Image (cartoon, rainbow over all chains, first blue to last red; front, side, top):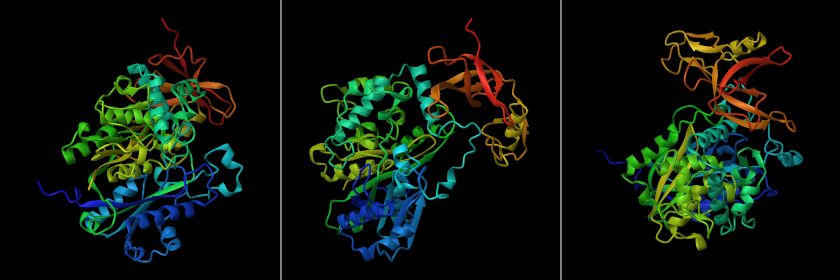
Length: 394
Length: 124
């Protein structure tokens, strides 16, 4: 077999984030620049050496284009740029590929989210939050001949999961409470000061039964970025490097997100299998799983794929639940989303899952540190379009 | 409405459920597409399914902001597995709706586009 051009050849060498908040008092462009500057400073790479820049479309919001970021931060040596489709780990995987291919030496990959007026009634009252017209994702123009709301197909898929497998709302509650409890230990999380117990969760009003507001990720103003370079160049930088074992993006089957409730899981399975095939690892080789939680029901589907327990996620969540700490520990050992996930830290559409993997593998996670963390699984997105990677300590 | 969905909408104006179907491999295609996902044929025609369906899943939600909760059903048509039409389930409530229930097609609305809806058959 020919040598893998990615495995152990590409490193994440810097991370940075803006403030994450419900109302940061800054534009989305400024937030993106906050994150990109912080990541470049963290890496120790001189500004002039940055030659790759990667942003991302968002499913529901205008994009901060790489051209805007380059102009705003005086990045004048960009020879590779990109603006990928969601989920947000895709911008990181694009940067990994670009560095592996030699298209650039130092890539900055970022994503920014904002509480536009399309997000909530509260945001509609703020004149600073009017989304520009015509800037919404053109790549996802699915003809909605039956006008159900965007995520309702996913909710209906979970309704069917309950019917077929006896899955219950308190199973989702274990996912939500786990992430919210970890968020209490993360100073930058929007839910840092907002404890949530299982009783609170079960008593919450149901917005889209069986889901409550706690099952949906927290809309915020915020941005995150990473700096990527070759493993070789990374060795000359001051910080601890984190190496890429494998990175993949899957598309398969039909969309649960926009329209229907096909209940297939094809793309989750495809993504996870690809990561195992590329590395020879299985779930027990992971020390932490940063499972995507744009909705708690999506996290449940990812858990089924990652742990190969289709239809039995409820039982796995029960077996892995520590009621005393209000947290999950899979297979007696593996924690999930130690930063709090989208549900607790805030919604940068899964980018936080990559950031936390880097912190843990550098040993920089403070009170959240997983002892001896050597490998982390990151998943992002849903069915049919998703992304994932396995990172390891360098 | 676009080139792929126009026939569907024209059918709604006549209280007819008109779905895309491949003229070559005979696969039903919904939502409609410009070519057949199964055999790549461009020979996309339109036909009317029987209206017989089974409830695949559902949500109980207000359709209009502030409105009364409605049972929105994912109706799997008898013609093909996972051929699904999303529509309200008339007279069903969170207590009476049943995944797997037999459904029959009906129409509501004042036009020009009428709305397909389904009704659960009484449990025997």
